[in-house]
Every structure is written in structure tokens, then in C-alpha cells.
Amino acid sequence: MAKIKVTQLKSGIKKPQNQKRTLEALGLKRIGQVVEHEDTPNILGMINKVKHLVSTEEA
Image (cartoon, rainbow, N blue to C red; front, side, top):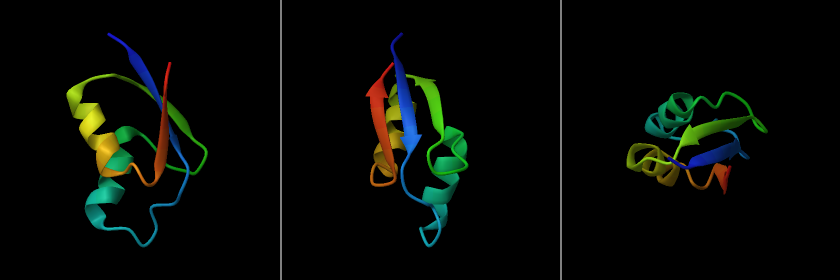
């Protein structure tokens, strides 16, 4: 299965609790942090929920 790199670009401060929890579930704790995940529908849905805070690229 394909991999996807997720980079946090903006802070989760002053964002709704569900978006903060989504960032945490993706493994993102700080701006500039990069994590790698499988390209599954679950992960893509989580990324879509916080797409204004992160950037993605194929790994």
C-alpha cells in the first residue's frame, strides 16, 4: 500500500477540540513535524478534517 507524508504547518491552538484530537491521532505534536502513514481511507478522512493545518505528499 502507498505511503503518505503529513506535515503540520499551522498550530492547533484555538481550533475545535475534534481537530486537536485529529492532529494528535495522526501523531502530530508540533509545527514542522512530519509523520508517515499508510494511504488508507481512515487516514485520508482524518487528513481531510484538518487539511487547513497540514500539507501532504506521496512518500
